Structure formats: C-alpha cells, structure tokens
Image (cartoon, rainbow, N blue to C red; front, top):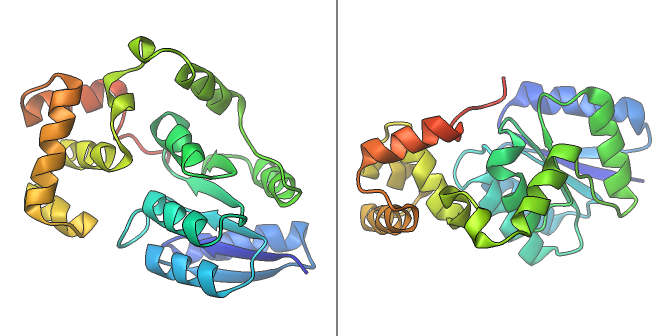
Amino acid sequence: MTAILLADDHAIVRHGLRELLQEAFPEARFGEAGTAAEAVQAARSGEWDLLVLDLSLPGRSGLDALKDVKAARPKLPVLILSMYPANQFAVRALKAGAAGYLTKQSAPAELVDAVRKVLRGGRWVSASVAELLAAELGSDTTREPHETLSDREFQVLRLIASGLSLTAIGEELSVSVQTVSTYRTRLLEKMGLSTNAELTKYVKLHGLNEEDT
C-alpha cells in the first residue's frame, strides 16, 4: 500500500490534496502534518513512500524541514508543493534533495503526474525549472547576486524586504537577533548593497517576495 505524507499549514489544503490524490491512488493511505516539526517527526517515525511538502510552515521553514528529513530518511522522496514561484526556491529545494518542485498554481493533473513519477523513483522538473537548473550550471558571473546567498541568507533577505525588524526575524526563524544581524551583514556584502532600503528595492525589482495566488 502506498503511503503519502502531506505537510501543509492549512488544513483545507491538506484535505484538498488528500481528496485529489485519493481519487488517483485509491489504494494509498495518508498522513498529515501542519508544521515543520510535525513533518520531520512524522517522516522519521513512520514508513512513507512520499512526502508532499509545503515550504511555508510554522516554526522552521520547509527548506529546513526538507534538509532534516533527507538527513534522517535519505531515501524518502520529497515533492515540494509551494505557493512560491519556481525562480525563488526550486533550485534551492532540488539542491537540498527534493525530487521535484511544483507551485500551487499547477493543474491538478500535473500534481498527479508528478506524484506518480516520483513514486516510480523519478524526478519531476518542469520546463521552467529545467531552465533554472541549466543557468545554475553556468559560471558565477552569469548568476544574479541573490543566487549566491545561502538558504538562510536568502530567507533573511526576503524577511527584511517584507518590513520585519531583526527581532521579529529572529523570532520567525528561531535564532538570536545577533545571528540575524550576522546574516544581514553577510548578504549585504555578497550583494554589494549597503542598506535595508537597497535590499527592499532589489527584492521588488526581482520579484523575490511575490507569491503565487
């Protein structure tokens, strides 16, 4: 029997995913998680054939959860289903071990196809994500400044641009204010910028805080 774990912070989304996948995979059993901690714990303690993981989860981010899951269960395939456009997180997620990346704007049939392929041991990469991966293989001189940031630096960049204080960012990421300040200093240096205003302008220009709706 196929076992699929659904991790999303919205119960109605989990319900919709379960209904959709239950129709396509009537023999499957499902589990649910609403936070990053719950997703990691469930992945560690249960026997699953697939984890469908959102990146926006309470507590630690979905990227952090992905890394923890792959560290504990390296053979467990993880399909990312996120509201964030592929240009923001797809390459980072695939590098962290995801077997595929889909946005929540994807057609239901595409999700079913992706799940089916990943369950067979394949990887799901759309044409747009394939282009991003190809660009990633190019030299660093062709990469945008934000693409040189670590995952955590990228998270801090987006949170600063959203208007959060360093204290609020620390609470969001469960780290100290000093740690957030260190990340801010590093990302400013890497991007050749000096102020939060410049960071915010850069993020808006590149659409890095836009979400699929």
